[in-house]
Length: 440
Picture 1 (cartoon, helix red, strand yellow):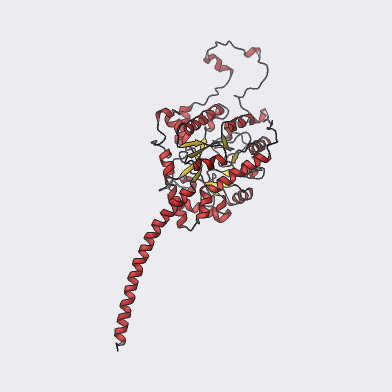
Picture 2: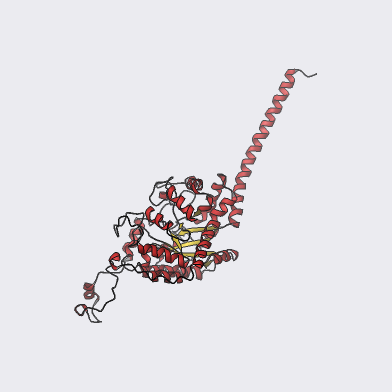
């Protein structure tokens, strides 16, 4: 019969051996789990590829290449964060391309410049077979089946319509399906979150009568109202006026990073009641409120917003090529899988992430179209903004010309200049400023 000492020694050896096997097995499990998360991410994003709510490649094409698409290959572009190869690597199946002109164009030639940016987006999305221009939720879904990258066009800043509902309608005819009511400047009818420009200052009137008419006409057309860049008061007014869900196409959580471009919890709750969507911006200054950030910082925004209003109200709006700095590991559109893997690691379910990746945006788009269908019998709005609210020296008031100001047809430009202010935005200086001050 073995002694107690022998039994204890054997038990100790067995326990140590089991422990070693357990350590090895645990290490192996961790290794497998790491691979599993990558595999799960790849499989999930293949099934539910990204709808990205905001991208400023079109602006970079203007800055770097003067919109001359013949001089570049969109599959591989240097000095930008977006091209076809990287969109495909990042599992981006639908991209909302921003049509943006700087606030300096307000009261000048914003409409012309916006048309030129729409032209470059339409060209790149029809001249390249990898892209497909879409104007409806149904077309977006079909483009996925066809293995195309769907292009949606969004105007970034209500100054692009020059306070004109007919201009808004014509932009819709050209394929625009979303518009941010402001950028970094107030319009005569809506208020910006930024104080960068001291224009159209008002008290207690963040969404004017004409601003409400803009929202109503966008509802009637089936154009998504975008509240990124709007002041909180304007956003609240819109959320309580719009018949259709709205989006913040590229904004993050104010509770995590207290930047005025981000959305506070009380406004998130209003958004949830509207059945709308916040698409999280990845720009460092909106993520960490610092010049540097990482993927974990980004995931903190997703976690917080989910806690407040649920995963069904969240999307992704990267803002690539519209800002100067992005988190380490999320430097361009190819890196989206790293973000999804981090959220999986934080125990987000695949169903929640399927919503975030695309289903939430599709739901909003479809609901906007349903409201449009309900309003189909309404006539186009004929509301006009009062002249005194616009105060635009470049806006022609239709009246018989004064003989005192008549001038010969062949009069020189220098002499014609005395009859009115210059109404063209000088792009070289503007482009320099856009590089110094990130448009975000």
